[in-house]
Every structure is written in structure tokens, then in C-alpha cells.
Image (cartoon, rainbow, N blue to C red; front, side, top):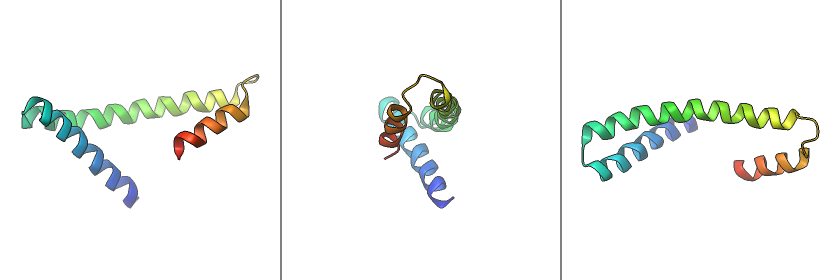
Length: 74
């Protein structure tokens, strides 16, 4: 859980820093830092559902998908 929390803090910091660097606005940077990780989390949920469906689809080269998932997770 500590790793998850530290990643969330880093994610918020990156979102804020990039947005602030582009806009120079603390309010916009703060808004993006709150919204972007939340939207990204929802997107990740659906991304995982698609990958899980691909793993279970007949005719899909199982090894190819597992290899790609392993490479992406590394």
C-alpha cells in the first residue's frame, strides 16, 4: 500500500508540475492534478478488462498476449 500511495503522490505531482509549467497557473495545475489521475484510473480499469478479455478469447495467440503483458509490466 505504501508503494501505491507514493505512486499516487508522484502522479499528482507530475500532473501539477507539467500543467503549471505549461500554463503558469496554480489553479489550473491543481485542477488537472486532481482530475487527470482520476480519469486515468478509470481508463486503466477498462484497459485491464480489454486485456483480460483478449486472454480468454479463443483463437488469440495466448503466448503473444502474455508476453506483451509481461513486457509492459516490467
